[in-house]
Image (cartoon, rainbow, N blue to C red):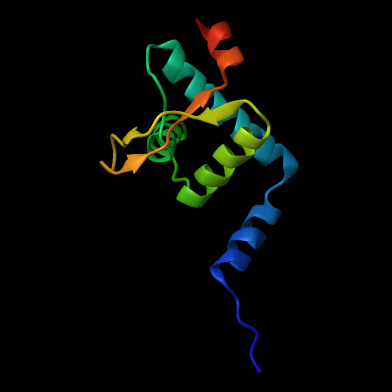
Length: 109
């Protein structure tokens, strides 16, 4: 009988292959992007918007799953939180964007 490899399995494998340093760097970079948006008058950032900004800065592709998992990790760490629902500037779909937590927003003001 063949083993069945699910999408969740392959995502977990890919995620596990990244080094701790790479993950920490990616988290810092994404947090800095969100903070920069807020610092420059933006309200919040969707995952797609964040991915596009990261790609523009680094001139390479990043997967939606990587962006999503990084956002979730930053939320778990307590540095980002979900904002008010709005339409995504990229897709037009209703999303819950991310913002720095209130304490960080005061530091950015």
